[in-house]
Amino acid sequence: MHEREKNIRYSSRTRLATNMIRERHEVRHAINELYKLVPPEFARTPQAKRLLDHGCITAIDIVQLIYRPDEPQGSLKGLRVQPSTMQLRSQQGLANARPTLQASPWLAAMPSELGVRVFDAIHDVQRGRGRD
View 1 (cartoon, rainbow, N blue to C red):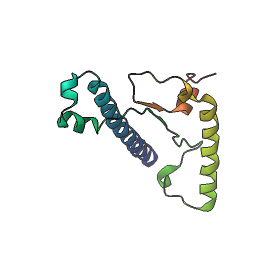
View 2 (cartoon, helix red, strand yellow):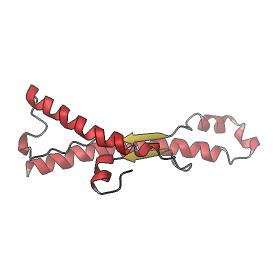
View 3 (cartoon, rainbow, N blue to C red):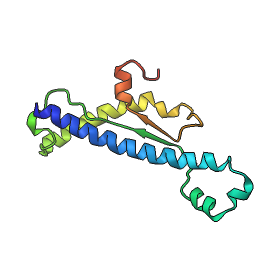
View 4 (cartoon, one colour):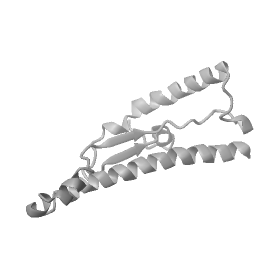
């Protein structure tokens, strides 16, 4: 039960942070899109220029590598910091990174209406949605 609670807590934090970044960047992206639509006389105003200062034209790809242990961790999940545990987690991280790099979903063209994409490639590969 403690492990499930920690899974939810850690996952929620990761997703909350990712969602905050995505939402903020999408707003910045939308500002630039909106600025393109305003009449030139409005675009030259200090207010419009100040708004444009908050805009952004970049696109971001976020790749999540979520720790999914092979066996239950129990209530000590997140508290084990012995060198052997850290080495095991490092190896698991590398094992997760390899299929993520092979799937490379970020290589697909970014739709122009998006400013941010979030990938959980391991999850997608496990569900059969990865790139071949």
